[in-house]
Amino acid sequence: MLSSKGANGDPRLILFDLDHTLLTADTNSLWLNFLADQGYLDKDLTNREQQRWYADYVNGCLDFAAYMRFQLQTLCGIPQSELVTLLEIFSEDRLAPNMAPGAADLVRAHHDQGHICAIVTATHHFLAEPAAKLINIKHLIATEAQQIDDCFTGYPGKTLCFGEGKITAVEQWLEQSGVERTLLDGASFYSDSSNDLPLLERVANPVAVDPDERLKAIATQRGWPIISLLLRSSIVVNR
Image (cartoon, rainbow, N blue to C red; front, top):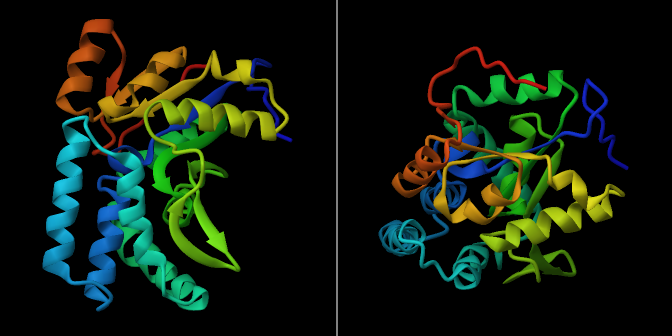
């Protein structure tokens, strides 16, 4: 069960998006390029497909279920033991160098306040887990990948942790953790993307991090904090 009390005795839940927030890049793109460099995929074809999907994401018209099937197909046919080895190399060679310079300081500041920190990301759990470990965040809420007999099927689970689905995923996680869903009411959420507007509008303290143009405009209009993690700096986190 989660301990839901902050340093001043009040429940505090701090949620972080992953890609282009705690990371300066997109985890899925890094993974596809990594597999291509390892000889598992055609690099030119993979890059063209990924660019097409990313354009839909930026334009707010991404068919996320179809995109997840595209991503998860890369896990099929590779033995589990081989995937584990690839993931270790991927974490060291691709994820670690792309951690946002200010991310560790921000997460540490919240931990020092006794806050509950969790990553909530559309990226599937297999790829997001090593990033969570690198940034020292224990709790991970991510899109799950179906598995049968320890083999990936190429399909996502029922809850797609994207858009409105992030709210559902967080509420399910709180319930499974034995914590009242109302903890979400006073939460903070850090994100770069206008695709995360449903969760940003749901929490008490939305924070735009190196935001895309649409989110920047909305955050400015509504008076939401706008910060950058692209430079390491001293970050003060209020209780």
